[in-house]
Image (cartoon, rainbow over all chains, first blue to last red; front, top):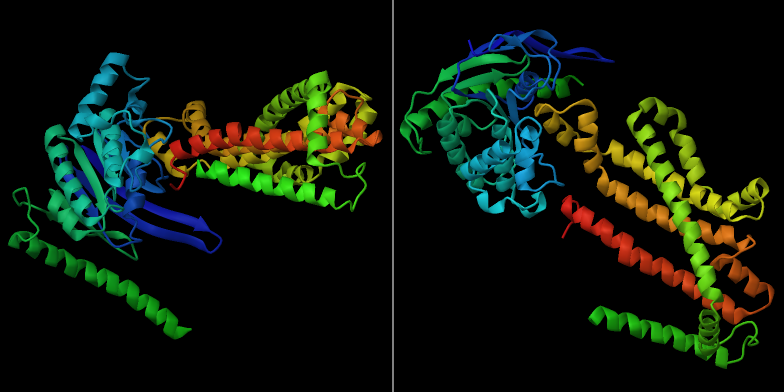
Length: 261
Length: 252
């Protein structure tokens, strides 16, 4: 199996004791798949992604990428964050060049930068700095930067969460094209049901308290998936019902807590 | 252009009021000379070369003192910014040291080094070092964690993380530190020179005061203020603004 999570758990220790985010997550992801992790705020989906990236400590279980255990960040996993996280002191070209500057000969590295900037339609902006770019453009640079190091898997943590609706829609189409072109394995975290269904081959739905996987849905619909496609709408409703149970549970807990005090 | 006109007009009004007060003869002319007399004193000072010598000496003290202050401040700041242990132990004392007005160091400096140029430079170094160190500390501590995270996912770590990400990311605060260190050093320089044996602008000021040459005193005060404003506006503020803009921290 390409990416494998075995009995993965995450908990924090603080003065009030142990707090468990989630436990016993088992998940196998095939190569070249587009997989979304969907769930309400607080279910630990971003934490899980950070653990795969190697940024967060894995408190229980193991994560294997092509059979190798993950313990720290590495260039075999590219990550795109909700905030673009570009380096403001570098121009667009040098931002994309950053991860491969020391790894590749100059010519080869620059060719690769050109290739990926073209893919995200930013060839005209190579000399621009971050402050001169819109949010959507910055996020495209961040995607090009992550792709430039040719990672085995691309991890995306609500990458379009901070964008306006129209830009978001365009970016989703762009990402679909990039995915089809590069054949990368993509793991995409979102809390938007529509986004998950529109983009993915497979949607992993997470529940909350405790954090766990409550559904694993294969989306076998032809792309592009239009918003008003009845199959898409049906699937969305189905997932919405699943999540409603989870969100109601949290709400009820909060209300009960207020009532008991 | 409009800005320049506004500022010139304002200056004209101030000088006018000054002349008016002088003409009313409230103070004897020895105590409060008029603008013309002050300009004359400035002209004489530059023509005889004495003010130029003083200016040259002051800039020499400042250049050496500020360079050392930037160097020491950077080293101190990096240590405090990188090591939590060091910051918890010594950080508070740095704030205490920074709050001491430079002139307070002058007697100590004179006792340690006598009436030498080095005594003046010592005061300048103390004046700039602590404010620089505080800003460098903030610079290191305020590197956006998001950028560090992103760099780590691209395989950057250790020393490479420090010079490829943390140093460039901290440049905006660093520039603020440099501008403030200049401002504090400039004040410290005047305090140090006032009690020194010269040459230097501060010394010239004291000298003129001892001989009751208020035209020269006011003239030198004007020079000190002008240099302060010009260097800040033309060099440091501009530099800082450019950096802030590039780093996307300036709201335009």
